[in-house]
Image (cartoon, rainbow, N blue to C red):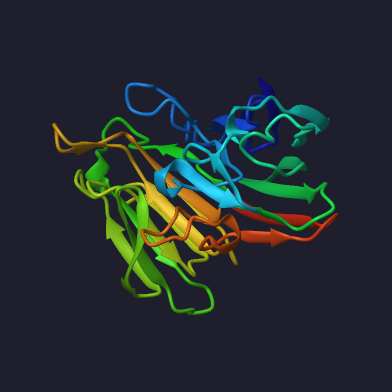
Length: 292
């Protein structure tokens, strides 16, 4: 495991998927990340690429060809190389080099950087189009935060707050059979209490939200995820239908992309929320997690 740290935080990251696995706050001695217990969900903070969510029938069409791809794509399972490492910063790189042409016919270079600033972790993505043509893709985050953080708390002591900095018109979406349906406009600054049934119908999904906060109403501890200008954010925890409970974590997921709509054509170039990147061009995005 690769470690970066400063006076506030110590962060552990593995090269497989360039995935953050541990964040310990040195001042309050809290561990913020989900453990990756496969009883509930075996991942911690995968990077989603070249799709976010599920494709209708797990397939898409591109230039007359049909390609199969499972939910969230393949980048979360590849081995990255460390490009640069300092005390409080690390960058990982991965080049496709023809390894995924059977499922994704584009060549790309992905760079994922992590940098510390006091009690915050910045996550930066860079996708380089290595093709002589336009490239279509989605990319998203999926970090899972452990709750409750303290033994004398319960899930019901926590709440979510979603906020739009510039008072943009926020929309809520709903998932049916893992596909997206638009639901309704919502208040730009809304507080959502955590309950055991909150994720009974899958993730909560919004557009035009700049900041999502998960905090304890007792202690104020939690996380603030700033994702200004990201088109979408998903919030999710594993729901146990039999027990009627949620898992002891919440994922806050800034996305440049989203699952297929129920009425999608299946053409990747027409996919709702897809990004287009010109030949030889580079896409960049950044979000920040503050550990409170």
